[in-house]
Image 1: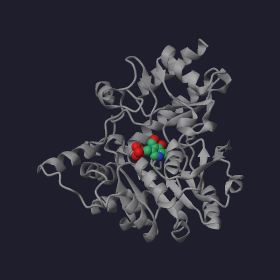
Image 2 (image 1 turned 180 degrees about the vertical axis):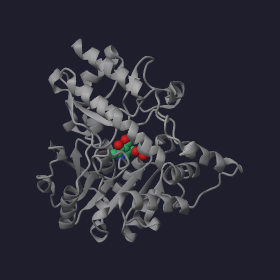
Image 3 (image 1 turned 120 degrees about the vertical axis):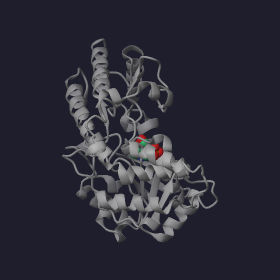
Length: 397
Ligand SMILES: Cc1ncc(COP(=O)(O)O)c(C=O)c1O
């Protein structure tokens, strides 16, 4: 692979702690006390693919940072559609892709485009808080569906019982953060059939769809047919697979032109009040067009971290977790320690010098209580040290 060699991209020595301490926020290196390891927000500890950096440098060469087209660079929209169609068997039309400043923003725009006051939205519990917050911001109320894991799948048996006359949208996080589960084609068929039967929108978040381990397979709900997905509104992001959270890049895509028009209007790109920067589009396009090799090498690294961490955590006193099928987080059951999620994380940070995310309502919903989330998108050495600290601290309880 000549100068694209991936042999040492994810070596221990490639984690630049000096840079991370200055730049990595959101609960991570720049925000924790000296000496604490933060396995908190899902954000890789490794530098991005060099093609991403180079593309941004090249773009800057002539010194112009002019306005871009309101609804995004054509080449970027084509890259997003190509990537989703090639790697995820979707059927996305570039003219129905809206580049946007983060997946989070995309979720808010989707919610605002289809929800009104009085509408109900089905949000799985637990799941990333952005589904709840974006729906609440649009004036809807939330109906929490308990996402119980049975045989490594989310049990959807009772989902239909949560649909009422007011239900307008179902939120689908595929793969699922924080449970680390991919939906099977049968699960997606079930969700889509219900959405079709009750004429519901689906907010389909595929930001984690690149981080799926070899023995599992990502299926996009969009692969189940274009017409049936007329009311499926999807979002893709770059922060998780390419490690570019600071670029604030994402894309919303739909199948229905009318709904897409509303999305564009609500995004405020037409007034220039909304939208994504030129540099973010250039960097994100380089990620899609030129950095797939990096994601594949990252997955190889993550697989080793996952297997190591899974074995160790499940041998630790009073802890257990599932082996993630996707994502780079362990969702760890701590109930046997007798501590609440908040007490556990606070004490682990103060006494054990390891920061993890508490399973609290604010982040994931009430169903996350009794769990903590541990990110393993770091080096093998840092993960080993972090798990040593966790194990030693557990012995003191
Ligand atoms: C499921 C899910 N959706 C959206 C986001 C937000 O991504 P972005 O950084 O593109 O806003 C995250 C971030 O953790 C996530 O886990």
